[in-house]
Image 1 (cartoon, rainbow, N blue to C red):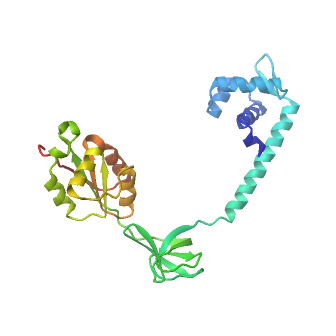
Image 2 (cartoon, rainbow, N blue to C red; image 1 turned 120 degrees about the horizontal axis):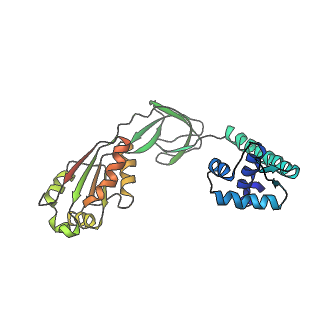
Length: 263
C-alpha cells in the first residue's frame, strides 16, 4: 500500500481527514491533540498540503479548507486503506492459532488428543484430559507436534518462588554469604534456579550448583512460576526488587530470605 510506504503520508492523510470534517474554528493545536503529534509537525504537514494544492489556507474563523483535489486524494487513499483492511480481515477469518506441544506417544495428523502440562512443558496425549486439541502433523513420541482447535482448561497450579538476598561486593560478596544456609534451602528441592549479579555467580560456583537462567532472570522466573514450576533465585542486594515487583504484579507467591552472614 503506497500510503504506508511513503514516509509521513499517513499523517498527511489524517490531517486531510480532520480538515474535511469542516469543523468550525479548527486550529493546528486541535489537530495535534487529536492525532497525538506536535503542533510543529502539523504546521509542517499543512504547509506541504497547501503548497501541493490539497488544502487552502484562508483568513477568518475557518482557516483551513480542503480543496477539490484534496478531496479526491483523500477518497483515493481511504479506498486503499479499506481494500487493505478487507484483505487483512479475509486472511484472519481463515487463520488458525497453532501451538506446539511434545507428543507423549506416536500421533497422526487429525488425531483428537488431550493436553496437559508437566514440568512446565505442554504435552499431547491420546488419553483424555481437561484440555484438548487437534493434531496437525504426524509426530513420533518425544517430537514436537503442531496443535490447533485448542479447548478446555489446562490444570495448572502456580509455582512458588524463594528469593535469597546475597551481600554486595562492598559487604564482602561470596565470602560474606552463608553458604550452608543456601545449601539447606536448595536441598528442599526446586525445578529451576536463577541468579542475579556477579556475586551470585561466585556463590553457585562454590556450591557447585548449575543455574537454569542468569540473564533476564525476573522474566524467566515469572514465566517458570506461571507454568507451575518452583524457582530458587539468588539475587545480590537490591537486585531482588525488580523480580519482587514482577511477581507481585502477577500474584505469584514468594518468600524472601537473607543469606548474609551478619543478617
